[in-house]
Length: 259
Image 1 (cartoon, rainbow, N blue to C red):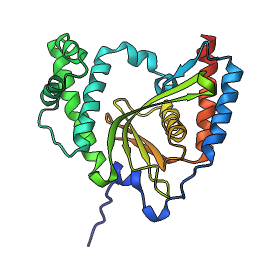
Image 2 (image 1 turned 180 degrees about the vertical axis):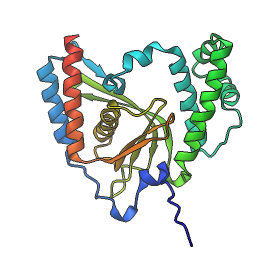
Image 3 (image 1 turned 60 degrees about the horizontal axis):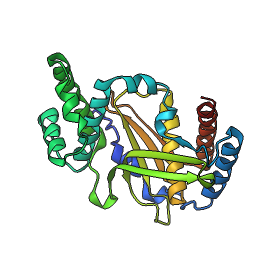
Image 4 (image 1 turned 90 degrees about the horizontal axis):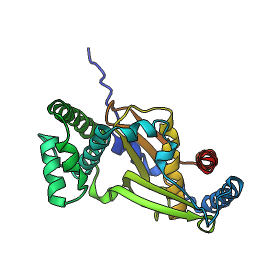
């Protein structure tokens, strides 16, 4: 008697999908989104004298709690660095030690060494154990990403709208593909060290919106992976999803200006 084993689809496979079923590149929607966001700026009262700057973190419900935890921030910095190595096919026997050496060699994130030195012995042991778990999830879930997919990590971007009254800033943990193909071929992945929650969909939409405004065309899909649980959400980018992202920004902008 034979048994059937279901193999979980990797992040790489989910992001790229089947080339034959990809929609044609949409270059028409971006202009309408810019017009909608100009209306948002007018409605909330932002101006070039008092511009509004938004980031994806503004859409996270737990942003205050996350920002207050230096341990969570340090863990996030290490997991982000681990993602870059995993994407490039590097395996780590001891993530904490190897990534600490990498930080020292690159001379980046100068506060990492200071933050690590301030940890108690118990917290350092906890960080080491958690990093092993997060890196294991990344290695298992990502799968192999071929170099010809042009993977880029920690991709930063900024889009200025409404004559400078609104600026959307973003950083996407992993981008694969290109926006120049005749069919939608760009895919975005955000990695969080927390379990996925209600804010995940808003952040995914925000990444897709900023990418659309920056490149002028819709990405293929946007996704989020929890390195804590291995849970992954993936959604195809459509004009409807982007209109919802504009609505998210409208709500966030009103609260930001009122504050």
